[in-house]
Image 1 (tube, rainbow, N blue to C red):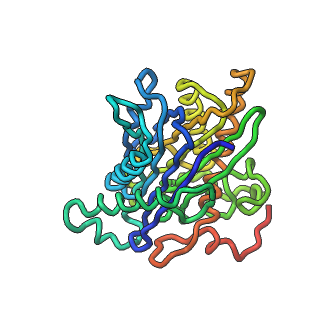
Image 2: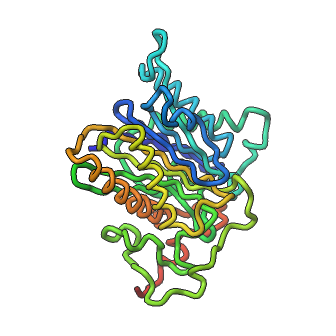
Image 3: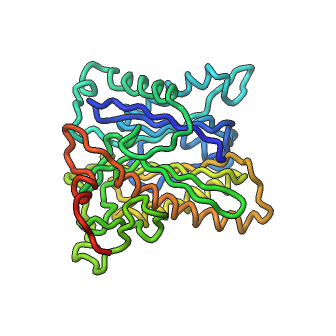
Length: 333
């Protein structure tokens, strides 16, 4: 077992939410930000050479800059659990966070545009609720930070996929709010089809003939800096150093490129966290890391497709879910 708990909280009227991921024990972590418009907290702390190498939680949130306040509630909750980096007799919880922009998705945003400080308070409340919901139920769909996510043509969501490899396990979580598409053109087939396990996103494979728009970089309109982002966490039970975790986070971005087109644009804040709970120590570390990097990219590509495939319709949505648009039809492969 990787040793990770996940908790979600959603404000259905706002069409936004928070996801909290908490390792059973402080875990080695790194981050790679490859989009041009990130909204993040404590990512500088994860740079190589800095003092603190382990984190107590990762927070993924909607709400853009307002959503960063969710981490405050998680810090408070962890402090109550007596978790954190020891300093001068105190415990300082280490909680990096990243947010998507989901404030133009059709939800009731009056609470965000209301009195000063109200929007941040909403995300603090959601952060606390996500902590209260922590467990090992690794579900996918319109959950937590993915509740209000969208892509260029379909509703996004929160997706999870896992894989075994020699000497360890990989778990990938994705909040898919991309400026681009995860499908091949306007058809139902996912760009991640080569990596699908079973029928986790429909078992459609690739189309027998590529549609004419398969290479078109369709994006949301209007394109605005900071208005999109795919967030991800790739966790493993393989023991990694901070430098190895950084390499894993960088390599995992290949999963975004395999699943989303276009990705890493100036309008996305694409961010991948890597987490090592370190419960297994493979003998051949170089072979393990190479295998881990490849597996992480493939697993993240799957999680991205799963997020869109399992998204659920809700009142006020501005784009259809995959199931609304394609679920009632038959599609050849």
